Amino acid sequence: MEETHGKGRQWYGFTEDQVFGEVMSDREICKYILQMLLPDRVIDEIYYPLKQKEIKDPSHRHEKDVRLDILVEDNHHNLYDLEMQTTDKRDLGKMLRYYGSQLDQRYTLKKGDTYKNLQNLTLITFCTFDLKEQDYGVEPVKRWYRSYGVKDRMDELNDGKEEIIINSKGNIVTAEEALVPLVNLMEDRYYLLNNLADDTQQRIYNKIRQKITEMNADPVWRDTIMDYETKLAEEREYGEEKGILSATVNAIKKIIRRNRSYGVSDSKTLEDLTEDYHDSVSRDQIEQMMKEA
Image (cartoon, rainbow, N blue to C red; front, side, top):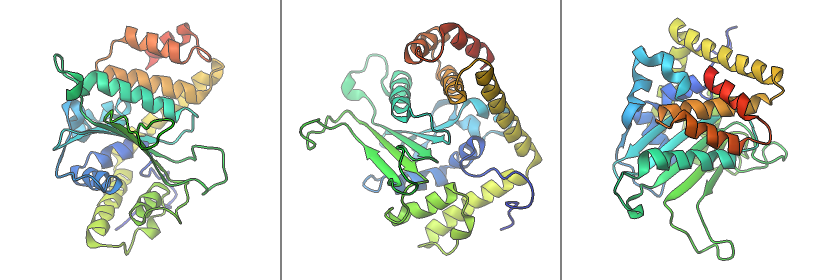
């Protein structure tokens, strides 16, 4: 397949937010990756609840910069939130905690239901950095977390929530074989995505590459992506002017946009962000970010 990668233009790969959102909004691709990451679970079908269909609708492309995650539900009513993170803010664990709480509040429990009706939730984060300050390639590619007892690791809380973190900078030598193409995709090593293990795997990764190639060749999509990148640059500049770490500004504005898409009131978001970021950002600064988000 013809790719514009390496032909003098900026290449937007799988880890770019807009590209990630478009690729993972493909039902077949998303289901394949979910099943690959959760081999002990049978996922027959997945659905995009509520407004997620807007990700696939070209008339709503301008809204993609405020919907950076992919939220899907399987045929057993398990929820999955898939997130791409390329900036190491050293707060990934707390980010997952916050996202999980927002999803629980908005989606997993209907009014009048008891806690036993709470849907299972899996938070999946694809990141391009090591979680700990170690040498490159030391950490595992895949981390999988559930709630266990501090003294008895066999004592599982069974709270229905789990987190999976895929680190493209991890040790690919010790990674599960099925994860290797995903890591190569995240690292733009397309030349290693030929001659894969089986026909289904090859077809899926060919489809992903084709989608990415088409987006990079499409002037409308390139403009959308560049506009989004410009917005991120402006946020970084805003942070520098205000003496705030740019990663913190990005994180706060992302939460603001995300909460608005989930129907969370600005007043509730303001209170939560003020509590979570009081050490580095003032309430007035957060209010200003809310006006600009």
